[in-house]
Amino acid sequence: MTSRGIAILLLAAGASSRMGGIKQLLPWKGRPLINHMLHTALSLDATEVLVVLGAHAEAIRKVLEGNTPYGLVVNDRWEEGLGSSIACGLDQLLSGPGEIKGVLIMLCDQPLMDARYLNQLIAAFQEGATTIVATRYEDRLGVPALFGSGYFPELLKLRKDFGARELLRQQKNACIALDAGEKIRDMDTRDAYKRLLRLS
Image (tube, rainbow, N blue to C red; front, side):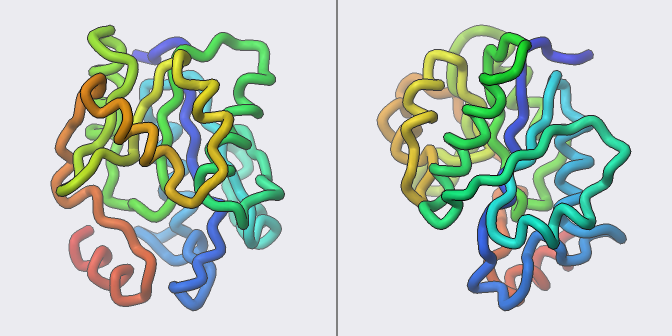
């Protein structure tokens, strides 16, 4: 069942400086990582998916699957950090014709995040008890996280590298936090990538 008014932002704009290569193009289950994450995003109970590129945009664009329904935007200010990509993507979503009631922010480098967990975030939001549903980390709340439209003005102002982390910290008492277990692991280095491959 598709959740009306829920959009997905898949952030893939980073330079992968610690990886020593283009992280978004690393092989994952027989396809480039970006396509694996895009496939996951497109399988969710949402009405729209937007991929945000930045560094390496042309190289990544060449491998993106062209026969699936998603939007694409390039953040020219990607060097300002994750927050600027969130703001860029949300601005693009809000310029479209449909009403957006919430936006789910996903990262390209969390390949263990699956549709089952991400749909749990959407379902919790749809129950209407809160306007933010986030993922619990050991010492904070983080993404994937779903923000209701009341927080769009704050998200549009983001610029720094920590993205929505500060907003989640400020609003932690208003959030529902779900536990994703091992799925929260990301891959910033080759060693981290190899560890995740063993878990997949």
